[in-house]
Image 1 (cartoon, protein in one colour):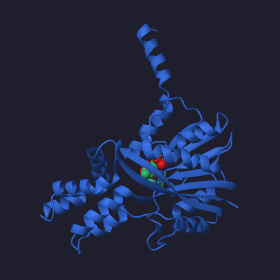
Image 2 (cartoon, protein in one colour; image 1 turned 45 degrees about the horizontal axis):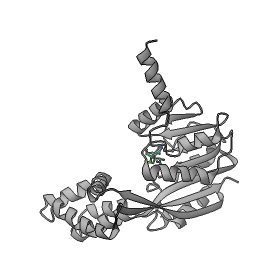
Image 3 (cartoon, helix red, strand yellow; image 1 turned 120 degrees about the vertical axis):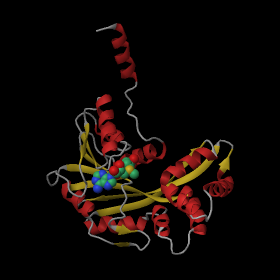
Image 4 (cartoon, helix red, strand yellow; image 1 turned 135 degrees about the vertical axis):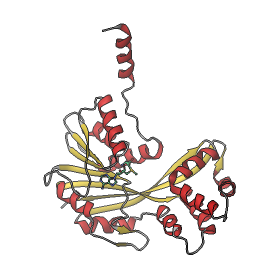
Length: 282
Ligand SMILES: C[S@@+](CC[C@H](N)C(=O)[O-])C[C@H]1O[C@@H](n2cnc3c(N)ncnc32)[C@H](O)[C@@H]1O
């Protein structure tokens, strides 16, 4: 082996920490694992693994004799996270390309199941506080979990960025615009009560739900704007500009004005609240 190759391997060994999506994802991913407390040597299912925010802490927690199986339907998330698992040689975790609605696992395969922010809009309307369809994911989770197994879920509750953008966009959108329902859906809030209903309908017991806040700090208003634009609002803003209702530049100016209330010496602070819900299969 050439010396240069050897040095590269050494350097790689030093950076074996998996790359994730960072910030609030890592924070709440680790929280979910802390709350569910998977025991050493246990088998954990991570539904909708994404960037691995809860898969990696779960793998650390269960240790070499345990195992974490992540599932994903997004191809780029799957490729990136499976690449990281391989690069970092995490031998007790894997990710499968699989839909949570139709899992290929045997009944009672896992001791714990966790899932961060996969969204329950297909099954439950949090504003109306009721199921709108048969819950295809939760029945599968219940099936593949062992008796006595523990589940933990998280979902987005109120976020400051959504509150600001919702307020601005709804001011300008014509009352008959089909974008109104999108704006409401993107800025909707999952609730403790809703998650209690979701878990109890599926048959879980010992349900506990609560809300926790994470303080996101953006170094500048521009950084905040970049993320907000990335977060679904671009299409609506372009619609408003295209129809000569209000320009994107004007929306940005107004958003920056509203952001003054959130500015501190170290940057723009925006709260992101997550609902956390745990339960047990009887
Ligand atoms: C918002 S991301 C969160 C990722 C990660 N759990 C976290 O907390 O950082 C939700 C992920 O769930 C995945 N997902 C959504 N529905 C799914 C399903 N039915 N089966 C498997 N994965 C799903 C999405 O592809 C996406 O990567």
